[in-house]
Length: 291
Length: 260
Image (cartoon, helix red, strand yellow):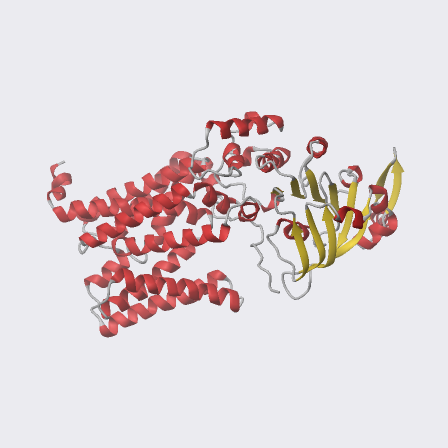
């Protein structure tokens, strides 16, 4: 017990534990919408795209949130442009643009920067370098996200379940989708250095899938996924300290273990609930006049 | 049916509309009006543009040519095809119906909204299923759940895409009775259907559609050999039974005899 509590003597660990728990909960909360909309790949792609901005901002020494945020936004716009203008599928556009951005980030850091601890932290997550500004940024983004979801609960749920009928029923679907993309981008920005580029997508998906195995009520899935995400962050951070393994890695492995345990407890029933969980409605997208 | 007459008093009107998802149009020069208290069935083969016509009416699609005019104050509700829905989505029947509530942004429903949902579900005979997951319902019950969600908006115009596909005969009869009641209460209804004998023949007004409107009128005006052959591209024999048209598939019958 003494060994388990020993890291709590260090201020950096307590700060890191709070950040990991908050980041896990934030990703778990947003992950419900991302998973149910079949947008997991966008989460994965955006984190890779933002890595390019992380590299560029660290080399030219500008604020990470500004540099990576602008880079991520530019990538999202480029994906949208390529998908619409060149009639390339969104998944292919994400694959091309975001991995190119990631590769550019690696090249920039290799050539001009210091491919040292910061590089590893961005890839796999670390809490060593978490500053007070990072904590405030994460807390602010979490508060903003909770407020967005609280105030747009019906719109987000309806637009996720059936965008076409939601549109007819007075939901401003395009605005709702844009709001969700904004929240997702901000969440990835805030959690990137804690969880890591390569692992952010897992923290979005695993808690939501585990929560889906446990309930068929949307409202319950929402808070269950948040709690599971936060729990994985808390436990993963502790394991990270004791096993001396990057924090993001242990947070994701804790999630994977939770998934396995819940799967074995719920059996076929839990697995059946996750079948086509990411299958968005087959309704055709809302069509805009071309005249 | 006199199109000129009904266009004078309409909830939604399409005039000379052409629409397509790509270069070739799905709908061409379509003119149609839905008046208050109308009960219209749109019949046509797969790919004839029935769902696109509904999208023009609800406003999620905009024609490349022509106009769609909705009366400004009209409340429209839409019931989609069951096949387009992800039935594994984590919502209960009550949660699904509550999606249609308006004017309140907080996540939880008010006592009044809960009572309203119970009342609508009870009316549709699925009140006991409110806490069930949507996948646990039969096809007919799933359709009634969507009608309940539509009714929560107190619509003046209810648009339904293939509401009887995948439901058994009893559910289909119940559905037609329910829609008849709603129509008698003043709700205008327009639905699409493949089912000429089970659904279309029972409706007061029909539209035959295949890229464009081929015929408009009563069941007798539309369910007859020449109109059906133009609409479906195959000869069909129509008999009359108890004053209603009954369609026989002549091509299949002949084909079957030939192979026997």
